[in-house]
Structures are given as C-alpha cells and as structure tokens.
Length: 402
Ligand code: ADP
Image (tube, rainbow, N blue to C red; front, side, top):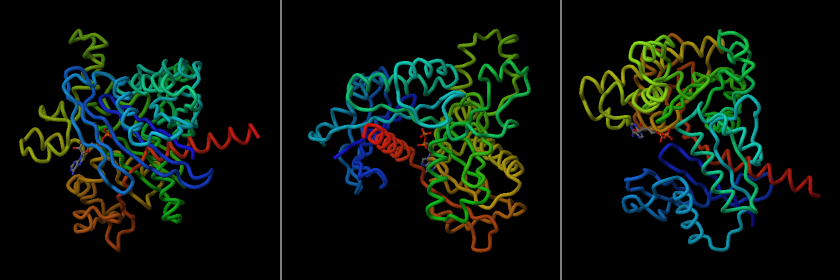
C-alpha cells in the first residue's frame, strides 16, 4: 500500500498529513492529519493529530525549548507517525512551497537544482519560504527513497492576463521576475475543484473567493481559473493580515527609509510581523481575541479588515465583469459569522443577500434563497491538493518506468 506525507510549514507551525493512496484516480485517503504549533526557542510547542474519523490521537504540549526549530518539529512529527504506522511505506513527500517564481505553474520534483532556484525567492516570502525549504531539506535526509515534490501557492495564478501580472515600473523589472504572483493558490485550487464537483454550474461562472486566515487574500475565478488576486509580488500585498500590512502606498516605504532612518531589515520586520491586525489593535493578530476584546482599537482593526475586503470585492467583481458566487474560507472565513456579516452588509447592489440564521450556523450555503449571488462557506484543504499532486506524480513516474 502506498502512502504520502504532506508537509506545510508556516513561520511557527508545521501541518502534516499522512495519506493512503488508493490507486491513480481515487482521492487519497487522509489517515492522520495534525500540526505542531508554537515552534521556536523558548516556546512550549504543541502537537495535535486526529484520525480520519475525528478520533484524537494526540493533543500534548512539549516542554519549553523541546521544539526550537522546524527540523526538530519534523523529527517529532515523523516519530509520532512511525509510532502510529510502524509498517507504512512512504512513497512520496509533498511540500507546500509558497513561492515558485515565474517558472513553475505546476508541482515539480524537488532536486538540488530546484531547491537552489527556490531559495532565491526567500526574500519574497520570509515568513514561509525559508521554513518550507528547511522542511524539504530535512525530509530529503529522512526519506531519501521517497519522491519529494513541491506544490506552489503561486502556481494556480501563473496564467493571469498580463495587466494582472505586471507593475507600472520600467519593463526590465518584469523580465527580472518582479511580477504580481498571487498566493494561497493551493487553497483556491481546492475551492475551484470542490465547486466543479459539487456545483458545476457555479464553477463555470464568476466566483470571488475570500481566503481569510492569519494570512489573507482574495481571488477572482472565471470558469474555475484564477484571473486576478489581491496578493502581488510578495505575500504582503492586498488585504491586511494577522501581522502583515496588506496594500501600502510605496511612498510609506520611502518615508520609513528616508525620514525614520530604518534599515531594510527593520522595515521587513515592521511590515511582516508588527502590522496588520496586530499593529492596528496594539493587542493581537488573532481575530477571536479582537472580536472578544471590545476596545476601540480592536474595533478599528476589524473595521479596517472588513473595509479592505469590501473594496477588493468591488475591484474583483469589476475585473471579472460580474459575480455569481462568493466563497468564504480560512480560519476567519469559515468560523467568523461577524466578519462575513460585515463583509456582506449592504452588498445587495451586486446581488448579494446574506441569510442571518444560516450565517450564524456556519452552514454551507449562507445566502438567502432569493440572493442572485450564491454565498458559500467551503472549509479549505491544502493538504489534499498536495496529496493529489503526489498521487499524480507517482502515477506519471510509474507510467514512464513501464
Ligand atoms: P493560517 O493562515 O495560519 O492557516 P487559519 O486559517 O488557521 O490561519 O486562521 C487563523 C485565524 O482564524 C485567526 O485569526 C483566528 O482567530 C481565526 N478564527 C478561528 N476561529 C475563529 C472563530 N470562531 N471566530 C473568529 N475567528 C476565528
């Protein structure tokens, strides 16, 4: 029996999935999914994992400093999986890699040359890319026999029309790779594939997806393909996020450099780690904390988050030439009735009408029966997208070898 391990490394977390493959066509079976959160020196990391039927296999805190980095986190995750499935043979390890640059519009096998190329994009996604690649290096050592592949968050957006791929700066930068890449592509691919399966008529139409988590972006889909995204060159643009600023006048960067005398490293830290909901509220990057806080600053942070989503929604509807479906996903999109209600309030002019009760209950369809635009909640699943890519890559290799 073939198995696939999926790894998704964030700045302080590692999500893992252990899938059984059932041939080359059927969906991989998620046997165990879990995560290690709060990786870092001086932290108490936490491992959680569930079986497919929801049974909790582990939910445990490590001692302080026991998981200081991603290498250790991967070793801990693998130890745990080996205890659970001592006999399982691992055929592939699929890695989420945030940035694939201009070259990759589909998953690719990770070789040393590919790893070197991907390391060049580390400055464009400093919260993720270095950790994604560290995870890949560690997995290459641990599982030298398994096929290792990278699945990119940028790949789903690589066929954007030129006007959505460029900035109005001298053309040499475009040629150097300074482009609007867009991110969260694995999530958007999952939403697109799910729509195709459960509602093919909606999949054919114009869809705006709001992926609202700690990282947040929105994507316009036409017939299931990405046409426009709110994120650009780096994972900073577009919506404000937990700790990232979102859209920013580049003049602000010049001000920080020239008037505040900040170094590039200080600016990077300010915009990636101290801005967004955290910077505005002065309290937290976590939406649950902000919703419960009731302070003026927390309310303002939420208001700004919602305002930018509504502005981008209008822009994406214009880019698509209309809208037939709106999808919410990500930790906030899937769970926060308050944010969804605020985003949809007064959007009747584009045909969106939210059903309050369905929204409060986090139902799959949350629009009224009369709403022209269907509003949906679809819990996203980046892991299964990676597992499917691994299945397909193994199938292609087997075909070539035959
Ligand atoms: P990541 O981008 O790290 O994968 P998630 O998609 O897990 O993030 O989203 C995390 C965000 O979702 C946090 O801001 C968290 O507060 C928010 N969230 C989760 N559950 C709820 C809830 N019930 N109400 C409001 N926000 C929530």
